[in-house]
Length: 420
Image 1 (cartoon, rainbow, N blue to C red):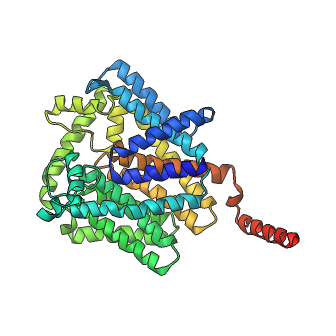
Image 2 (image 1 turned 90 degrees about the vertical axis):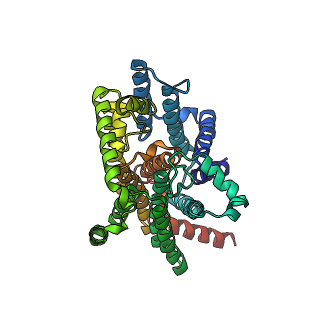
Image 3 (image 1 turned 120 degrees about the vertical axis):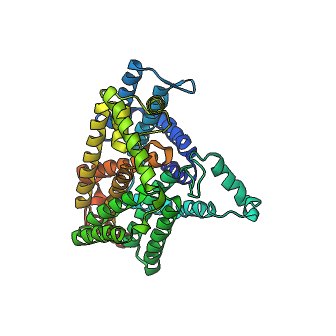
């Protein structure tokens, strides 16, 4: 059964790379497994389970106050199912996967290598050639193009159907590259880590996302800071700021900056109006876009700012819950890092936290955690931080002690000698 669970979590990470349609299917399978085998292990007050349950409750009350539908389906059903699946994912991860930190490391390094597929898709989307269209790759490109939900442009949209969302996915992969380069042992592996970092950065450039660079910089700063290298952190941050200051041509799509800022300001001001009118319980995702179109007379899916989006869609209670989740996650990641014995485990905590903070940084300009791929990856990072914190800092398993592994090996050697 344990082997099956490991394959299931690997399938979930693989689905994140392939398409927005696959993660919900895998989450549904995990939910069925959880309901079948782990009904007595459900927690109501733990983090992040309490967050998912609270947002589900807020959604139900909000919908009762202001009912809304999407394609004939009550929106509360869609939102409640989403957070319900995240809740069951947490329960399953906590009880079905007794992961050593090395298992998590292996999982993320495999995910990192698989990320080359996303880079490949981004590169191919820049090629306009008849022979490619008529090849088997052409059918793959047509699949992603058919489910693209943004206006036609030269920007690569990857496997998510949207350039900004693909950029968010590439941010996480780039941050894993820095982690891989710092913990892998062989010289060629370290070189490969840095090469893949620049490869993922180039793919971000192909997406044309500007907010992604801000998210990547914030993630890098957090990751380096969590290693204890404070001077390096300040140096990297100032260096990147100086680079953009003296070479503004590095900013993608400069010709559209002014028009984009104007549109964003209008979106944010309208979203704030929606929040003021529904400040207590919000209007829920999907319904937000319906109200927005009535007010602004043009369509957007979300508020293009993660905090403003949460406030407008789930009200002040939802926003406070989200801020509390972020605070507790940061606090527990730092505690996990301090408690860990080995450099590799310490940097694993830093990498997971850097992904969370990077997506928040990217979220200042967008709202990526609503999408299936980025949302699952975002909340998985949080789930792992909380579960590893509990296993590492509260229960203190055998492998958490510095000399535990060596003592166990010594006992095994002595037992072998006695047997002989």
